[in-house]
Length: 525
Image (tube, rainbow, N blue to C red; front, side):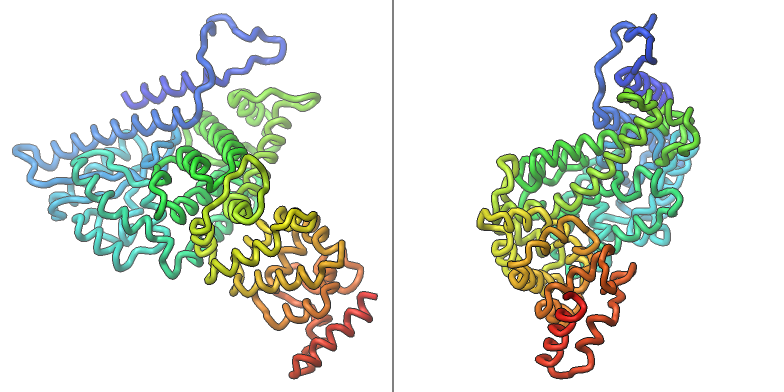
């Protein structure tokens, strides 16, 4: 029955994206009246409904096996997590669950075990690894035990995972009590002392775990992939959901719409990101339908037949002289690039709209919301950071407009340094010192690597930051195209001795600065 439901959903889904071959009738024989395109979130919602029904059946069978002769003396609730919890399930996917029971004894543990066994044998992989203490923790806990764990020991990522928690089956009243009691902890997680480093470390781990040879084909975990969108949206929910209950929704698309409505994301950016996310999810669904296999990898570039099939079933039409396989490659690259660009804007552009009007389409954050966002990004003194942003990006001059364009990226790179507050102050001072140099902002705008290396220095070393203030022209040495000796090699943490050696011989700061000025006159003449 479950597979029949999947077949019905897939038939409707595929019919909506049917594209005829060149020269073929737009409505082939037997295909009259096929439906309009069905948004992926509708398909994903129906797939989650089917999973709910399947696991409700599994629980019924498990109850009959564990308690074959009498009434059931326990209460157990199954919480759906991840994509199933958010009602955005794939065709082929693990279903993550958490169990809460009263009492949590041998019977409820056996019941949960039978439930997992039946679900895995009949439907899909049922995974309870998101429970407290992971695979090493108790399979079933009482509500009080769950609450104690999350109060005392839970990591930041565990609260992020709870954003998707949804009572799925079993005792739904107990499931709702679980969600309601944990909600205050979820929506204050951004106030935790370790919130920023935990979030940054998690993002790095996701990208680092993708093998180099697969990064260009990975739709989910790679840079510019699905996880980038989900991660960014969830972080904004955690930051602003504490004060704005309209953001407390489950699905990624619903959350993005709520962020747009609340003014945390610009309308145009929100629409673009939803389109990009929907396209990537559509490709993911088509690849999984090909062999009913869980996958997030595009076919090999050499497998043109598979890529052509994927393009056709995803509704793509070749433009100009491109083949369908080439059209698919171009669309995936463009979509990934848009996601990467918007990832920066999601966090930093709304901050700038609080101090300068960037477009009629974007709403401003309130001062309180802007400071919450800065605090969540690692700035210890959000009010001072806002003062720096105002000084840099307000006023309506050309320099201010260019600053507003480049600051989102600069602030992201600063947020990953030891002291982003000191780095932002140093950048403001350096911008003022270089105000008569027309190349300064142009270089930061046109060569990302210069900004990345400069922010690494400004947020890490006050000493070297002072040297740059004394000799702003040394910023040119950060460029890969510098004709003079480069200040930094491929590793942004390696500072070439040309600047440091010029000043490092002196313990007197005035003499060190004089040495930096001398470097400016000799090497940069």
